[in-house]
Length: 232
Image (cartoon, rainbow, N blue to C red):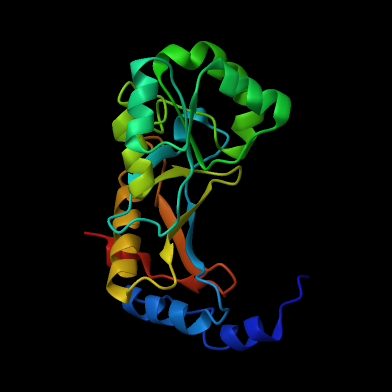
């Protein structure tokens, strides 16, 4: 059993683990229980009703948070020619072709948060699956990271576009802001994220898609949200 710090234990006393909180109360508690000095990321975890063993029920897409994530996102782009120039102009941190792919395989270069690829580079980018796939960094048409609209994709991820992808247990985990966000902006991000994720429901899922929703700061206790408040 994991041991928690005194700071965590004191913060956890403020949260009723059996209660489903309103969004307003949850955001208030997040701020009250985040007592470390750095600007913690606010994270959301969702238990879904998908069967992660079935390919047709996999959840992998992107959503856009109206107020961004509050994090500086490093974007790498695989592109050549005009697409490479478009990526640089849009603010990509790293841009290149086969030489960039080689740097990843030979040097273990992974200092980026998102990898985007133009379709004409997938011949060599596809070979990076064993390296980028396990880290959730492999470009994919479904997640909007393989696209001919390079500049638009770079700008979107820089502005707060977030990839949503289920883990092996069928759960989803994503950032929804920072502790120092104003309460209304953090609430807006959480509400928007839940609504967008609910719209990604795979057709084969039986019963409730979103089953449990928990928000927390990086070092703080989990706070359960009443999912019904987000339903139309």
